[in-house]
Length: 335
Image 1 (cartoon, rainbow, N blue to C red):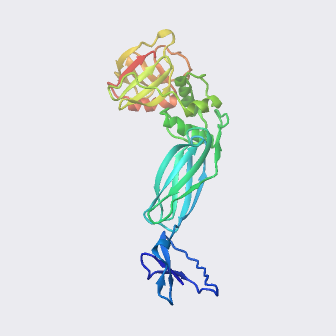
Image 2 (cartoon, rainbow, N blue to C red):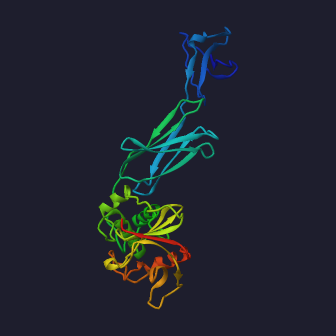
Image 3 (spheres, rainbow, N blue to C red):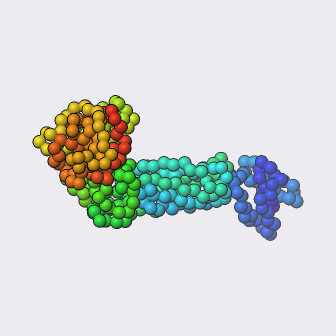
């Protein structure tokens, strides 16, 4: 007895000789879905079409979820066999049973895949990978669930991956930092201060559980005005400076304005600049209202403390000086 493809009986998938009672067993290993029927060789007869058997082939699929931690990029990797050149798999990321991420990724060399998802919330995560094509049975694979918890408290002097992830998240939310690394230095602290100010939280440099929670669902400020497309806004209530690009807040910087209302609300323009120190020791000032300027200063407290200028941390002063040409609109207000 031969087991052949119903659509093409010349394709033999396996064969066996019947026993004394007429029984037989054939093991076949098709690589794709196939409809088969039996052929009795000596009688040159086939089993009737209504007895055709559909054999569905499910590919072998593996999947693994790694690197799931708050604000990191979790990786989903795996392999499909047999090879399917040019095909794709669908990758889903589940959080507490809800789909929070979707990717369709191409199989590398028809076999392996890789997808990445940024983890923005704590909770239990699981990845699911699906493959389906016309020639095979659909297959799905779920990874083991992993728990993403709040990171520990960090602050000035801290080092490690949690600092890197914090800085990346702050940059993603447009709090100004020149880069992201594993060292919690004065620049990290100033960006955290700006974040706490905008969120209406305690104006401290440490990142505790409340900060980690707020970073997941932060208050996102909007500009007071969208025109001109590039300008600067100084929010005296929150004590932050916004750099507006294309009508959106692109950089948020910790500042300290004038004590006792010494900084006037209004719309001004940069009319004078000094590259270096002014006679009054203002560092890289950009003047916008008489002698009032955006400038670097050794002390930038969390409250209004200047004589009318907008103090910014030293490390931000040259950057702001470079991006604020003459005529830049400076909008000052209380929110």
